[in-house]
Length: 259
Image (cartoon, rainbow, N blue to C red; front, side, top):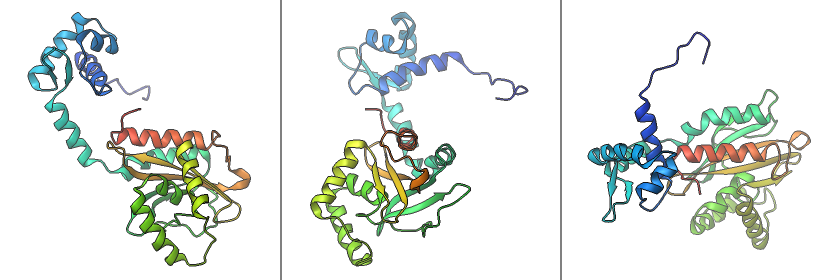
C-alpha cells in the first residue's frame, strides 16, 4: 500500500466471524461450541451470536448433539467458486514470482490428449537454448514433468500414455527399465516432486512439483529447469523449496485443504 493510499474501511464483525468459518472448514467432523471458539481464539460468549446468525442464513448447521458444521450455503458458495477456477490462471502470477526468485525457467504443464503438455513458459533474461515451447508434449519416462504426472495420474492412464509415448518417440532416448521407472516414481512420491539431472538434455537439470485440486486430483505440474552449473539440484535446496511452496499455494487456491 502506498503512503498516499488510504486503508479501505471494512466491517470488523465480518472479519471476526469468518475465523469461525475457517476453523470449521479445517475440521471434517462437527465441533462443539467450546472447541470451535477456542480454535478461533475467542470466548464462547463472543462466538455464540455469530453462530446464531450463521445458522439463520445457512452458513452452518447443528447436529442432534448441538455441534456445528458448515451448512448448505457454504457448500453452494464453495462449489460455485470451484467451477470458476482455472489452474493455469491461478498459477500464472505465482509462476512469475517463482521465476524471479529462482532465476530459472518455469513451465506449467497439464495432462493433454498426448500426455503432459506445456501450456505456459516463463524464461529468465538469459533463456535456455532448448527446443521447448508452448504445446510441447513431455516424455513420461525421461523428463521431470513426465515423471511427475506418471507418479500421480491413475496407473491405467499412465500405462496407455507410456505405450503411445514409446511409439511416438521411437529410439529418441533410452527409456529406463520398468523397475527403474517404478523406483523413480517412488522417489517422486517420497519427495513430493520429481527431478532429472542432465536428462533428456545434457547439462540441463529440472524439478517438477504437483498441483492438486479440491478432490486431490493432479491438475498441473510446475517445472523449474536450467543449466546444471547454476541449478541447485538438492531436494531441499534454493530451487526445490520455493517450487514446492509455490505448488502448495496454487493447490490451496484450488481448494485443496492442508493435510
